[in-house]
Image 1 (tube, rainbow, N blue to C red):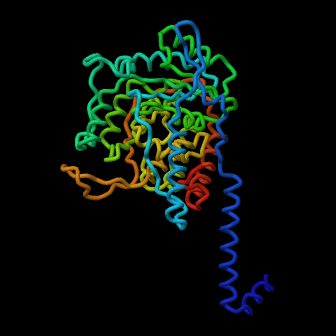
Image 2: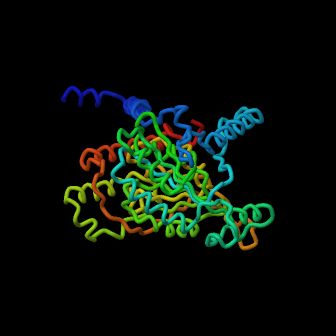
Length: 412
């Protein structure tokens, strides 16, 4: 220790400063390399995972899965190539929100891993609500399905865009995409038997992942293939009352911007202090509060203010999807937070006055947090202690990866 002190005293200040700066630089690049090694990297999609199984009047059929993401990616590559040809110094282009037009009013994605015992009641509740709210025919006769209320942004547009929005308001119908995440039980058979008994041919679509990817990977895969004007992902256990989807649609429409982008998430924040939370174990409630504290510290402002990031009941307008889904990395429990962070960091869109003229800009995609009715369901695959630690570490890695440029809004 005395030797170290004497050495420091004999060393010139500018030399000490240079050594300190060098140490900081080495530490930064070491952390950067470490993050590249440990940060989650989604695996490539296999050819069989771009097909789905559905029922027909005579049995089942395997068909190609529509994929707006592949079209978006091809357009993005072409756009990037044009930009580089026009200006060789431009290495990247602005995030693009182009996406194919919707074919149905509502898409629902259920990630499912060994859910044969819990998925049937969930599907029954979902189909009962979806049939009543949207019907099964995407282009029904006038009056066949209750007209959906237009959100304010659609009332301000004019000309060709107004005609497109009017056509969208006439769109009905729904689809249910069940992403079977490598289940080893009868999840697929139960889902198809239900679809056959209800005549949900080509409405219920089952996509099977050859290898388990985790809940986040299943949700992301499903959202890449939705055809709806709105896209919901919901847990297969039915813990959230499905009819609360109507609240989410209203919440999404309230925050939607001039680009048609909006997100609404189910929240259990209002249940703190209720029997649904109090009856949980003291350990689980402690870990829940601790995780929320970590979340508040590590996430950007808008995301840190969300009371409940983990409720498995989230709705996206179609225009919001290209700003979130293509940039997803997390495939475990932490994926919800990455989605919210991506929505918050989405490119700005113009804010328009009553005459349609741009009067400013609005950064990010607004998120509405909507109270939902929720109850505990047995059979959860969450290991409270182990997964809580993994989520805290995953959040730290996720935040550091975005802050240090390991993750960026770039082509995968």
